[in-house]
Length: 248
Image (cartoon, rainbow, N blue to C red):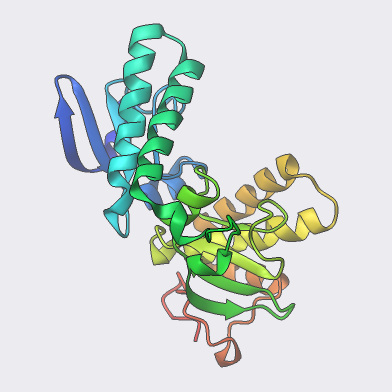
């Protein structure tokens, strides 16, 4: 029922007449209802969101809040005016891209010769797998502004060619409690795609195992271990363990 989704509300951010913009608990939403919800959303893209609400996930650093809100407002207004969601989405992306360009983020990643330097999005090396994959916490805002506006949660080079081949990226906008689940998704997806799976099959399979571990967190360490993750002092890892300890 629609009323059930009120449990995901955290704080009313803005209100325009009957239209409400809510900060919501994205971690709870992903673990209990929709593993595919990302940074923000509205109806009809997510049919469980009330038609008079725009949802924004809690940001670790709210430095993209205006981008996301203006995107949703543009989509909502155009949808109300035209009834065409495809046209509304196109308008919203145009607005968001213009705001990001004005902010000058791209110049922090590309040099004057227009060569990209993806290492400039690195914030912190989190760990390394037994296969030599380095897991980096990255600046999600810069990635969305410079490379791909729809980048969310994490990624690897088999989806995004600008991610170095031996790296897996985690978005710094994630709650640290979600790091191990997103890492599981990315490592599993990368493994399947390296075997020849296409993204349209590898992604839902990775979402399936991610959601399973949200509901059965005691299985998470063994599933990560299958993918070359070593929970020991040798990894010097700062990924939180949802069972209650820390991966050292």
